[in-house]
Length: 103
Image (cartoon, rainbow, N blue to C red):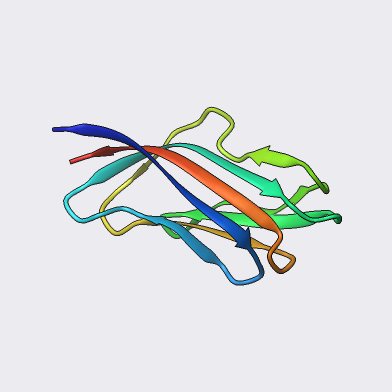
C-alpha cells in the first residue's frame, strides 16, 4: 500500500454545502486536519460533515478567526466518502483539509 499526503482547499464557502474532498475509488483516507477561516467582518457558523456524519454543527467562528475542526483527532474515510462544509453566510469561509491517502 502506498501512502500519499495530500491537501484540498476551497475558498468562499457559503450557505450551500461545498464538497471539499471526495475519497477516490480503491482508496482509503485518513483525514488529519481541517481548518476553517472566517474571511468576513461578522461572525459566522459552520457545519462540517465527513462520510455524511456531522463532525460539528453551527460552530461559531468570530470575524477574522479560524477553527481547527479536528483538534488533533483523525477520521478514517472509505472510497466515495466526502467532506463537506457549509457556512451561515455567503462566500464567508476558506477551508483546507489535510489527509493521507492509502492506495
